Image 1: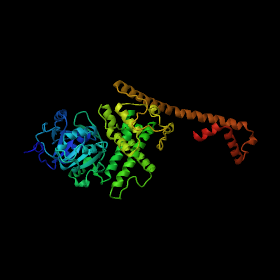
Image 2: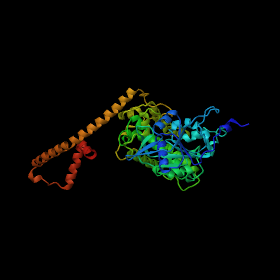
Image 3: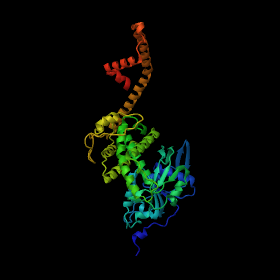
Image 4: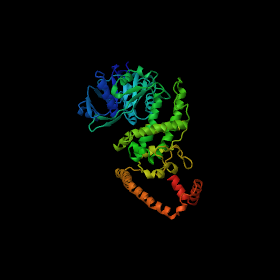
Length: 505
């Protein structure tokens, strides 16, 4: 007797076909690039809802990408809607076939639900590339398919790969129409899955990774085994430092640096860097090779300062960009903070590292709790006033905590949330008014500056002759240099305010 699982098992699929799950900005860019440079490559787009199929048909089954003002449209894709099978009751698409090569480009929070609808179609030893922000989702996908699942092979037989997309991609007005706002590379490699490498193969032994690397528009490159997880973790630290703070301040990336906001930015970074340091040491201890040692041979303070400079440089290079997390908030979409800051908090808890500030930031982003620049110390009272004296070039290297740090999981600061649209508008208007006020003050200062200097010079010119005229002619220039020096010290002692103004202002 044939079992229901055997009747519903997928047919043998094309070993060269590449399936793409997730047709957001990243998924569209990857699909467009693959089709542009590989005309005969079989590419399948997987849609998880009927409305996407309607939009795809309205777009004439083509992907559009604008680069430097040049619009390029490509077609020739096959597509299908994925369905979740429950005890064999759900109907499968007509071309229900095994998947040998899968690219997952969904948002992190939507990945697990879509995964349950497609995992039974994966062939043994299939290659899976996950391209998205954050970390920890691959561990969830692997755990979601325990050994003995009747709908597919155990997850440890698959080859897991990760991707870090550094290109800036924005959606234009129409569906399936994107714009490449900033060129960037695609970094590929084997991630850590359950504390071990996701694949024992070299990256270029995978047909899927070779195809991505051979696609010029993607600027893809592969990293050696053991190097990719560290690069992935560094990207998470950058995102955890910048993205959520652009949400709570409702600002662009560049506005977080060289301003009083930098105090909070640096404090969030310090917590994230502490977790990264311990994770890197843990991963490096498992590596068989001794050729590369990340953050092992240098002191922690020096390593952290180098990482801070990298984060700060990224913020400056993307100063005019709106972070993806802030775009999600503006578009009323769920953010990926649970797989960015949330991942660091979970790993910190496992390693015994308290992350109270990141816990508070996560809650504020979920509550859409916005603050103004002058409210930083009020909302985060454990930060010292000393850190507010920022140098424009020298970063903050020390954050002082008042009293004991709060326990993990406690809610810090006043329980104030902004949930209604009107309140959000009010806070954004206040932010805008504050920025405009500073700009006006700066302009007035520039205008008043030269006039004030001119008046000071004129006043000095009028006073100097009067001092000389008061002295008798025979007393002029009769004091020796030593006497002048002693007289100068005497005046400084008599008038310490004058001495302070001269030396400090």
